[in-house]
Image (cartoon, rainbow, N blue to C red; front, side, top):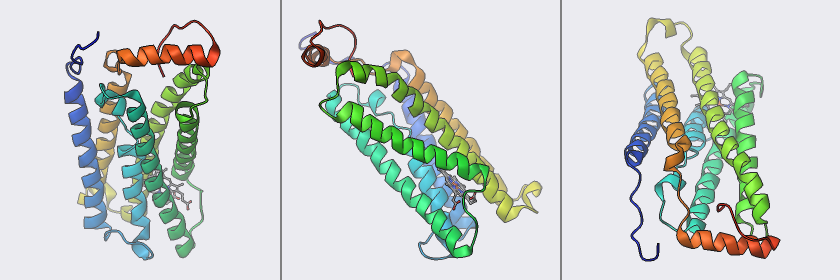
Length: 251
Ligand code: HEM
């Protein structure tokens, strides 16, 4: 409707987004507290270099990957929301790359073999597929020449793999936390020592964060509705790129 004020966010959405952000910040703080209080903190080119790995992975592959931009920015132009979506995922990837370099360098300095654990296999798969997903997303949705029907066919894959990779990243973190605890406090873990309890809490927070974000992402009625001008534009775009009569949604 022309001139009509934008519809308010659906009831409950803001509360869920707020809870997800609070959980996200708490899990970053918990990771920092664990590494700072029990693992000596973080530093590059030092025996503490390994600790950069969990911090960057939780920040990049979990907190920043769980992007709710399309749910939060419901009334902004689709083009800006798309650009922000791509930019934040790019930042998440860069931070994750720093975390991966940190662990490989730390292994090399200490003479530890690479890629032998289940955690490293799942983690590497999550990172490489996330990078691929980002490249494909930029190619399909940001390059101007991509046709409407190609975008429409790719979109369900992008949505499914986005959620799947977020889940895989959380699984990789849980495996990494368990592995780190077994490396460092194998003999006292079963005695409920504070470090074990704190790291377990981090694991529970990761699961809770994943559930809340997953709920927001999969609620159909919380999806961003296309703006009136986007519907018109998408019809023009479809006609221009394919010469067909318009119909269907937007990308
Ligand atoms: C999605 C997030 C994560 C990804 C993608 C990831 C990826 C990786 C990769 C590829 C390695 C192998 C490095 C090598 O072989 O030189 C590794 C090692 C390691 N990571 Fe992670 N990691 C993640 C999160 C975490 C977290 C949250 C922790 C702990 C709190 C952790 C703990 C470890 C440990 C202890 C190692 C060394 C032992 C091993 O190679 O398995 N990781 N990680």
